[in-house]
Image (tube, rainbow, N blue to C red):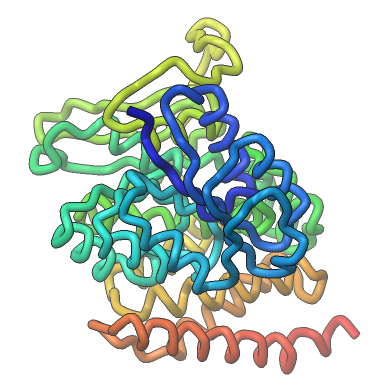
Amino acid sequence: MKKRISILGSTGSIGTQALEVIEKLSDKFEIVGLSAGGNVDLLNEQIVKFKPEYVSVSKNPEKVVGCKKVLFGSEGLEEICSDKSVDIILVAVSGKIGLKPTLTAIKNGINIALANKETLVMAGDIVMDLAKQNGVSIIPVDSEHCAIHQCIKDISQVDRLIITASGGPFLNKTIEDMKSATVEQALAHPRWNMGRKITVDSATLMNKGLEIIEAHHLFNMPYDRIKVVVHPQSIVHSAIEYVDGSVIAQLGLPSMHIPIQYAITYPDRFEGIKSKSFSFSEIARLDFIEPDFKKFPFLNLAYDAGKIGGTATVALNGADEEAVFAFLEGKIKLYDIYDITEKIYSSHSPVLKPTIDEIFEVDKDIREQTKDLIKRSYLCLSI
């Protein structure tokens, strides 16, 4: 039988690559639902090719053609995630919009292929507890967490998680270079083709900080046993060290098709999209470097927020995201992202065991504070 799958965020970077994987494995999957933001034209092309039973959009539902059932807004995402006939849902939307639909899917016993960072960064304890209660598997799509998932046989025998980072476009640049960096330079990632927000986070290594928090929740690993190492080639996607000193790593070419396919076909493996066969001799060398915590201070901030827990990570995530948006709009400089985030984060008094409603309340408040700080203290400097 074909696996029935729905994709939240089918027109984004992960969503479009997932559909490429599914097209290659058309005998293995049946598309049930798709959701999109504003790119209705691309969604209409996907409707023609994949013939979903229903779709959901955040705007312009009247422009959707070729699908009998068109849903709308957050209610549409909730309805997609309430269809118990679905075997797995790929959550590939970006931002906090992915959290509530994911919780709905888990409550309905639907397995999750997770590519949305905010779900675990904002509410990791709640999400993982609910998944355990409902017997739901959460398979990570991020290349790093997917690598760790592939390496683990028995988590109780694992001593450390080792998360690799490419180092981004500023690995070999100075702090002064980063302070004067343009948006174009921050978006020029040397290895991965990703969305604009996550690419900026990769330039500051905030993305790796968020991955530390995600890894803690996914694998129930204490923060002092989660390490980051810079690996410019992006061939080793992450590794684990067992208690006996054995280190198991997952290697592969830097292509998101591979972790996406692993997550949606798990526990099976099939021949899918391959850019070319892996060759050790062509790769020739693998370098590993300790991260520069002074140049990339977000790493320390993420460890601190993770160890505190509760809404500390909500504050960190919300402030960073709003600051990144301001940078992409040319309102602030790259290094201002950290300064702004640190100020907002440090002023927050965390709620240690928040409800979902409290998480969203804190997120809204943090974002308003961040926007206000940018308006008061940063925009005036660029006028």
